[in-house]
Image 1: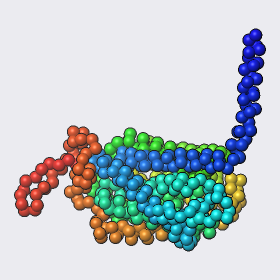
Image 2 (image 1 turned 180 degrees about the vertical axis):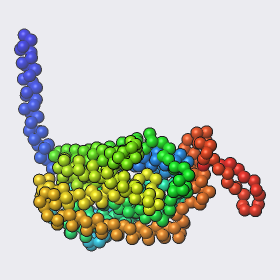
Image 3 (image 1 turned 45 degrees about the vertical axis):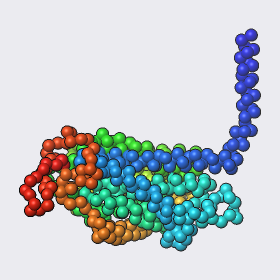
Image 4 (image 1 turned 90 degrees about the vertical axis):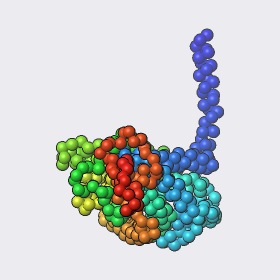
Length: 477
């Protein structure tokens, strides 16, 4: 009797499967269902990229001093709003709107019709550069605006602890409204570099070196923090737990950053990109910690963090076009580069409190060039083979041309923007504000309360106008 019931149950399940098979087959090929799945994938990845804002905030806060914690968190919070609104208003149109090889001239405020395969070949919109993906226009924007926020956040860490809050916000607006979209148009918007054969799958150059070059100019013009290079006492990170948590959040978000750039739920591509991204980041840690230990005989957590991030930055451009073993090589070299890059900046007396320039600029340049070395046609016939796989120097030359072009453009426009902002509102806080910390000087609050701030960070500053009185008050640094 029991065997009869068991057989009946199996027969019922078999019947249900047979009935559902046509529905499953239909779902696999139906264009509307595919667009729905692709859109869900893109939005989820966009959410992961958006969450990277929290990672930047925690990482930068932890690697800087306690007296500037609120200021750094506020910058990362405010820059998301500024970058998002600026990119919505003009940046997305400049980047992806139809126009010339230099800049897009359509699609501001997302006005204008989408261009998508789902609408038919005869349909003409104003976003031809994004016509290769069938997800709705607002999904395309949502994913891309999170990239713009990331580019602006890169600058935040390099100029931390001495820049005026309004000055940083002003530059973030310029970066996300003009600089980043213009460079992005050349690469992803059908502009100058795409015609030259330049390849950057998810943004080693478009996002990371643009942010890195802008950060470099800002750090140079601001000058170092007081006491950074006088060797009296180190300007140490105040909370490595926060920094570590921030790094893990960035690491998580990077899987959306890279794999989401497929803009479609392509199982093979997503699996490969996620795996190359993971392997490169792991190799980046190994490269940085080994190099640092060889020099200093210490296992420095900050170099582990920046090694992982540099490996991630480096694999961002080639993640879809290289083998797993190549990804390990790319990440390893990216991690190694962090150590000499940091030392070079120190020798040049360029103060980067969080290592953003070493990670995003040096790692981004290396990763972009790595496409020309490690790409294999089995992953993309359009990209072809790099120099190490009998592809010749052509792709590498295109990559070098792209890195140089974007670098010169970003350096020039960033220098002009920083200088104009300096003339209008000033870049750097005064010495007294820097001494007491930007939390009290600009934000009017403390992250941790006065009781936990070391006594050594308490300084005496005048509170009355010069000549009015010699009275002084003790204020928290």
